[in-house]
Length: 312
Image 1 (cartoon, rainbow, N blue to C red):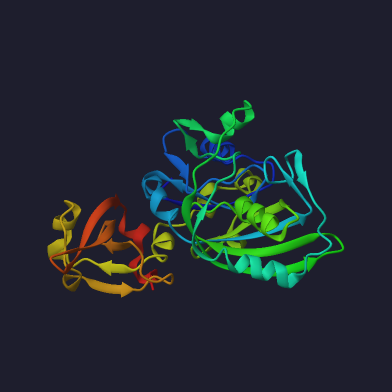
Image 2 (cartoon, rainbow, N blue to C red; image 1 turned 180 degrees about the vertical axis):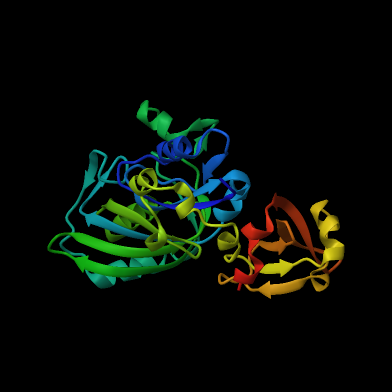
């Protein structure tokens, strides 16, 4: 088994950590396995599983934008902000129009300060918020900045008191919080009834596999090479005479590298520098007005795993 990525279609009710454990039992204990961004057990969709040295790229993959499809019911709010919880607030939703929904959602675009759900993995004084909430501790998670790029109303059915949205957002965004805030802005409350992640960067749920498929066949069959991940970032090739220098973590001027492609998501904090048998995530920086790349994470790979001819 080599370094790589598996795009897993996590089903409703499955826990992300349990999915990782099951895949580990298939590939053996000698290989590191992790994931890039968990999903609640009440959510489904794309879970990026990392194998081997690719586990060290998790924090960078989590920075990629994501797309979610969410359905919500108007008229009530639960303690978990989804259908697994107990109703704690109710109100009439008959006055709500599609225009009301669109106007309220417009205020949630861009950089916003979002309050995470109480039932979440955020830490409060060293403890997980969901652990404290389930013990009856009165907690108030602190707001945190998140970025919402786009929200599209896919369906609005006041008869059923339901709405369906497509949400394009950045790292750390809680969809349950968006629905909570939307319901409160509309004056009728709202709760998530289904949630599915369809994209992480360029990685598409349609290209994913289920646990059942992995268990029935060879995991190698579904393993994506590292270059499939690199396509999400601006890529520079490293000339041969600079490869040892960059491997050692030294800064380099962009003008000394060969730019291969731009990120489809615009200028980000990190770029990828590709050598013969390694690649490095590098941070953009300026010193005395001079642009530089500082390697912050280097991953050793075989030439086959990088497949430069496939990076476009």
